[in-house]
Length: 121
Image (cartoon, rainbow, N blue to C red):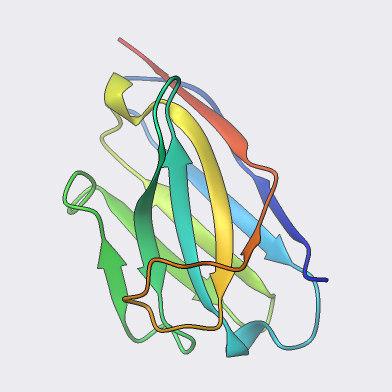
């Protein structure tokens, strides 16, 4: 079983920045496409960003393009989400996820416990 542990969430004012981290267990981290999802109160979980196995390709939801950057360090088994220019609409629980499938696929196999991001106005 793969274990994913998110960290870096917190409270930030609108316009501020946060960097989320997701540490993955195991020795095959580079075999997985990694992604970030978020779930706002009363809403469904939605895709935020994805990154290919080598980090050469990325994908973003339209709502975060130009503001968020996903990256990974396969030597550290860690994926990151740099979030800039945050606004209250970004408030959500953010989840790290892994999939064996392509970066375009919306199906992920493993999930972290989530980390809360709250953006105040």
